Length: 143
Image 1 (cartoon, rainbow, N blue to C red):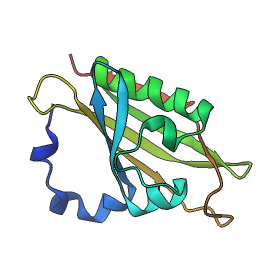
Image 2: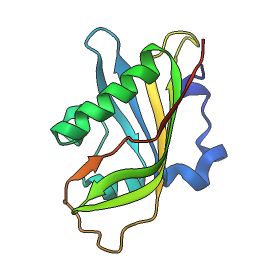
Image 3: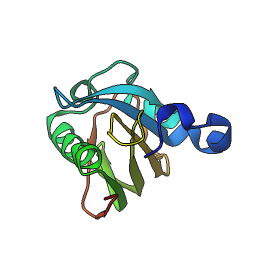
Image 4: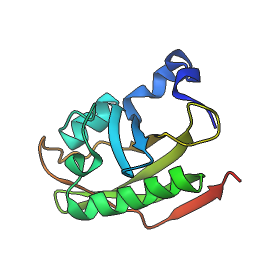
């Protein structure tokens, strides 16, 4: 697994606005925000850096996100979802989401790197809650 230190922002510069990442604490099983690109931060209306996953998502979205990110971290596995990504202001927003495990030592996952691509809704309004949807999951184990 790649480490955070080996990632080169310059190599993915054109995609940074849709990238997000969390540190993973294996003991507490908590995910702590590391970064979120401009489009992700704008959508959620929150700063991810240092925030617990549960502080970013409403309860149902937290459960979905925590379960998927835990599977990425603990299996380890790659996650892909195409189709409905989230519900926003009562409407479903389609797109694609990918999650990959990160490991400082190359073996033991201690982070999750993700990207969420979607068309910005014309009905966008800052501060409206985002409910994550995960209906079309495709998993690839790294073992």
